[in-house]
Image 1 (cartoon, rainbow, N blue to C red):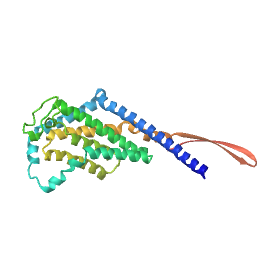
Image 2: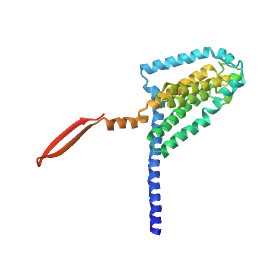
Image 3: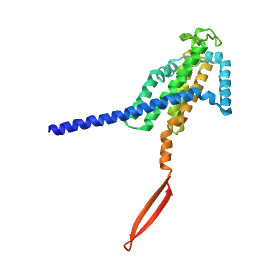
Image 4: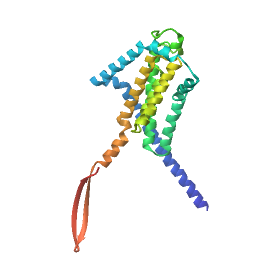
Length: 277
């Protein structure tokens, strides 16, 4: 009995050590990919082609257009506050910040426990998208130092190199993170209603920031662009698609086989060649 018990415990310890080693290997690999993707995100402008610069110019033009309508949209967003709207636009308290971090960690953890590379990779993509978009946003906030609407200093009041909360309006952190998170999640299912749901939620968060008089229109327009573009960059990065590429490479390759049959007590050899799809 003691021998069986010792063997059982030893087996559990061995299995646990193997599993732990596998988990640490996966986590280590994911951290490495996370850092590499981050390097690609921040070095991307140095590799822009003409198409990228065209998109940059269009984005700048749209943000500039938003700047022209900042005061008008602020007036409209501050009219007719109701209990229904108050409850609806409380979404910016839930969708992002702490809850987004919990969701990202939860998805990644489920992927690890379920030994699902796909689910784990979604968690990695969410982390990359939210964190790197967030870093860009926080940097711009401090560099530009734009006053928030509720300060009544106007939409053209800037105080560069500040960390004061009432002077970090541009861009919106909530809007950036909501679009970064939604872009990754929307990419996971090829369904128009699924995608509309995620981007609709991000849109509600963006308007909630206007409704609560925390941001100008141009703030959230810029934020949406940052979140979306970083999210698209992350989901399209080769390191986040390597499992699919490996599966294609493994499946779409030639196969060879040699067969031996006996007919009338004599061996008959055959060579087969094909390509699997």
